[in-house]
Amino acid sequence: MLGRDWVGFGMSSMSQLDGNVFFNDRNIRSYIDKVKAGASPAVQSSRMSAAARMRFAFLYGFRQESYRTSLFSDRFGVTLEEVFANKLRNLEQRGLLTHDEDTIALTLPGVLALSTIEDYINDMSDAAALKPIEFTGFAPP
Image 1 (cartoon, rainbow, N blue to C red):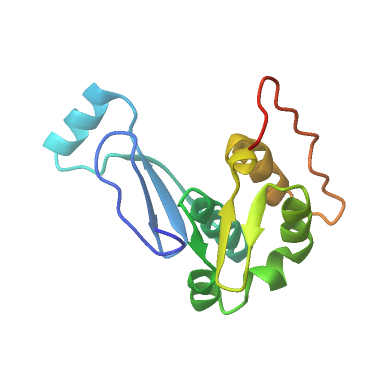
Image 2: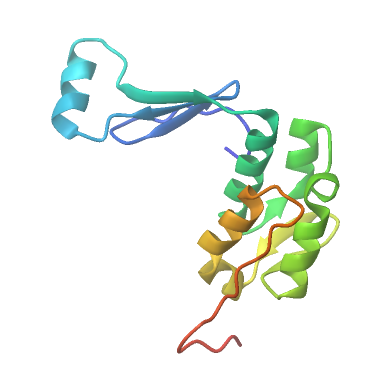
């Protein structure tokens, strides 16, 4: 996946084709009826902007053990640093990710704060602030 096109199969799956995102029916009965009738089980679709595709590829890459930054630059013709420099620096300074010239990966605290990080990355304004993250009952190693 990692910024490339893919086709999801099954109820509730998601597909991405040429910047379009499709979501299959979440209702099992409706999904089965559509498939049996030879109809598309997609119930929602939307076209993502280039910026949205970049954010999606970047955030999906976070869900992997590590993300090769070359996948992003090969796909979009710009580097992660060119698009997300300030945010990468901020996340790294807070100990939420590690970043070298080849890979980027979430630390354990970053994994635990993924939804907050996603909100931060998706807010493309320069004024976006990373919400304070508190881990109760958790002490990073």
